[in-house]
Image (tube, rainbow, N blue to C red; front, side, top):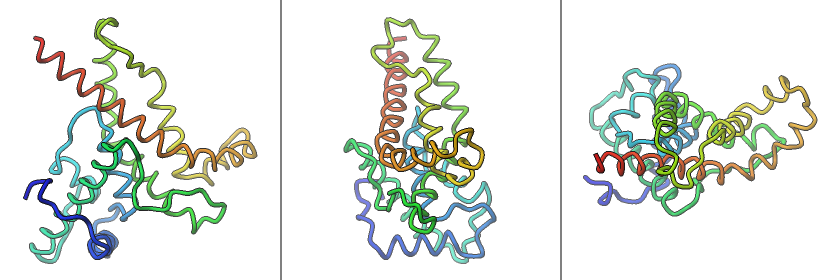
Length: 218
C-alpha cells in the first residue's frame, strides 16, 4: 500500500495506537502517543529523507515492540505510517498544526500534550542531530555564491532551545538565571511553536534540495 492509498486516520486508529504505545508489554522508554507525533514532525524536518524502517525502532527505544500478534503489529505499522503521512501533508501545506492541544497553560495537566509533543520532537532531533551537524558542515563548505538566501547561522539551535524549554518548562524555570522572565515568556514560546517547527522543516527541505542539485551537477 503506497502513501497515496492510505486512508485518512480515524479516531479509532488514534485510540488503537495510543493504547498500543502505552501497553505494559512495550519496552521501557517507548514514546507515548503525543511524543510520537512530535517525533514524526522532527523526523520530517531532517535534512534528508528518513524511511519508516529507520525511524520505527526509535519509537520503541531501539527495541522490539513486543506485539502479541503479527496482525496487530501490521495494523500498528500502517497506523504509524498514516500518522507520518498526516504530518507530512501538514508540513507541506505550510503549517505545523497537529491534531493536539499545543496551547500553553499554567495547569500542568492542561499543557501535557504541549510538553509531550515537544519531548518527542527533542527525542527525534537528538536521534538525527549528527545528520544535522553533517549537513551544516557540508553546507558551510559550499561556495557562498551557491548557497542562495539560505542562512543557517544559529537558527537551528535557537529553535531547539525554544522547543526544549517547552518540553520541560518547570525544570527550565528552576534552572533559569531569571525564572520570572522565563515564566512570563512561556506562553509566547507556545504561540511561536508552529512557526519554528515549520521554519526548521523549511531549512531541512532546502538543504536536502541543495545537496541533490549539487550532486546532479557533478
